[in-house]
Length: 181
Image (cartoon, rainbow, N blue to C red):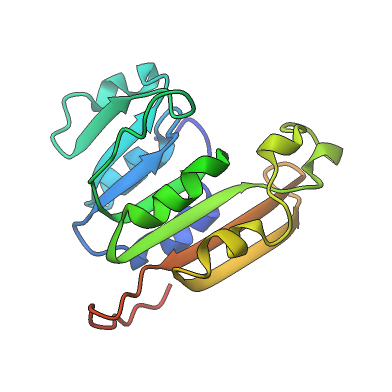
């Protein structure tokens, strides 16, 4: 069903997102997570510069596809809020504060990308695309409640250094929610 394996991090924490909510799949690539989230019953906004791999989703009323150059164009999602934001294998540091602003109360951020040290194992090697140790914590912990964080070497599906965070926008005006991942 999916051309590339799903991120186990996304699979693990997607159930924290409000049932039936709207999820942003940022830099969605071929749409593996957009398809997965749609299959779970979420409405999905899939954004990437090249959306040609999402043609099969173009008639799906639960999936909105936005073609945008995320690194050159203005932020295409101003004023929009989401129950969940998913980012995998992508890093553009100017977007990090915008991701927090894009979360509804109790919105869930699920972020999984490459960390410093990955250059020993393959691409990406460019430090501009590798997270420094603790960088996701520094970017999100001051505003969000961290559910889980990891940074380290993994062996499967291929050796890589990964950094991951799952965090919730637990604002003081929203009632607490009990969910076990």
